[in-house]
View (cartoon, rainbow, N blue to C red):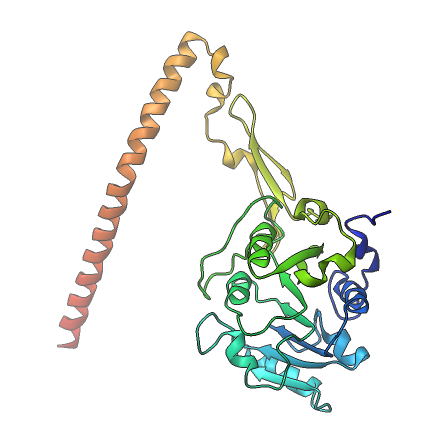
Length: 313
């Protein structure tokens, strides 16, 4: 008899991790053959705070490459592991280019190409930095996704280090399949993949993200009624900022027109047509208004520069 698809979640346990990753990864490594005893994490913070590999280093004797771009966090990381030669700390931002991608950084270390665990947590370009990895093929990849995005939505943030949107779990599943990986567990913030050659060891008959993702508590759903009323359900807030969504601010139609169109009376039909024409004109005017605004701002800038030059003279 096959196990439940989410059976790995029964092993959730936190030592350093945030939502049970330590226990799940421990169980995965128990099952995998030929483990190398090496792991990698970026951004690693101080190497311990909410880390998905610190338990392997501290309690399982693992060697590791820990990469952190922030200078203060890197210094804390270096201090935390100063007493062991098994940890290679690196002060770097992992990117997507030839001179900053993970391949380039790891080639400077003795880590084997098929190391055991890669943990990616950089709050944004996680998808793109994994996509750029070509020369290394870790057995297990634990990668952060944006938990506010519904499971079935494929969303990939722009490839830009200045942006922190995150990508969806569905997008990561597509990328993983292209790279030869299969999804085996989904925690609130992280999806865990294993190389396809090992997938059969986990006895998961259906590994669709909709089956494996048990926690959707961060998702906000927006939908409309037949009458045009916009509804909000689910989380109903910006979780990292603490602001609640107000459905009254999302209404597209004025209240007198929130009615199923087939039930409109004569006056509502005329009002709707007027409103629709007004919306259409507003859409065509918007680019011209933005252009005039930019021109005015440009003029103001030139005038300020002229005045500045006059004062300098």
